[in-house]
Image 1 (tube, helix red, strand yellow):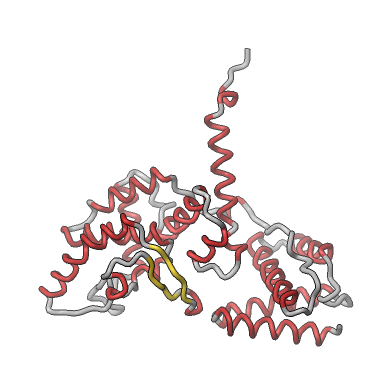
Image 2 (image 1 turned 120 degrees about the vertical axis):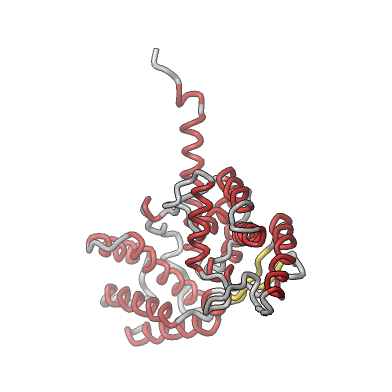
Length: 308
């Protein structure tokens, strides 16, 4: 198998990403670039003939070149996905990158909120705002975010018609226009039910209409990401939590971490979050590992045993 054949296979892989996942152009370009770099590293060894040791040597070379863990993890993800595609298509009879651990650094792990922290935030969100409408809206936004794990851009642009019936599940269009199903729990439904009459009354009073669940008079027609970001920071202050480490994305992390701690399957969490690559979701296993270790070190009787 020649280098040209390798690159034709890579091109087919990129086309499959575009067709099946609706990946964005910059994502496709990044995958193609990473795989070209890997192909160049292999030299006379074809991608079809590469083994686990070749992939490990490539990662080690990247590390020696000073590339960050995050960058090496992205490149490994591209290689893993390519070989998964090649195996499924019968190009390869194995996946040499399958069992290779993703490079991680401690600073890559997002801040983790405990269940008590989230409960505290929810309670404060219910009482944060200039009036009853704002308080109900803020509460609904926090509850939906934690219940579904939505990205903040997906949350602020939710259509009212889709949520008004308080469905158990609904479809959201995420990155690359890829649809996924998310779930509304009872707490989120109650907060929406309390908010909707106040929302509709405010719109009626202003003699205006809006397709969005969280409308705004701004250019976008809905609450902006930045506006909600500031709301989250202020609610964090009310909850006596460090606003520098609390953000909408941290609540999305909490959704995933708490599900995993409760026994949810990693593939289910991947689907709910809309991650294209399971390697992205695997970061939550590292967060959980750190949390469990901390609990043991802080609470195990032997951890506090005094020297005699």
